[in-house]
Image 1 (cartoon, helix red, strand yellow):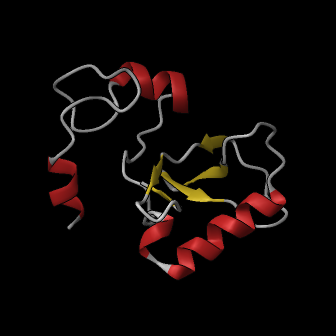
Image 2: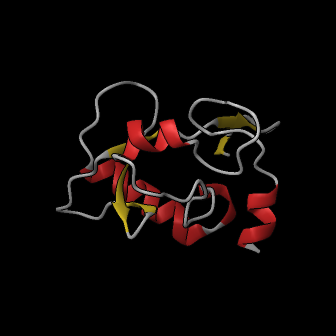
Amino acid sequence: METEREDRIRVCPCTLAEGFSGYSPSALRWLFGGRRVSPLLSFDAPSQDETIVEAFLENRRHASISGVQGKVSLLLDKNQLRLTTEGEHGAYILKPILRFEKSGSATCQ
């Protein structure tokens, strides 16, 4: 399934340069010190799975990132970005895109 999702990526997620199925070499150098990192997250959007919703809420409770927009803290672990757990200090920030439902509630994409 991961290959199927990677096939849909046609631009670098960082620079938006066309012709890349992941991060471009310049983005890998700039963001990750040249380490090869998957452009796909190892977890689903919070609206898809109750366990993920809990993980996001817990992450937001222990992460001290200022600002109004919701953010979660990530760590690079074996070339894969993952949510931090209590006591860990993240090196990356994820700002989920909020999508509002007809009911007025917000979900993440």
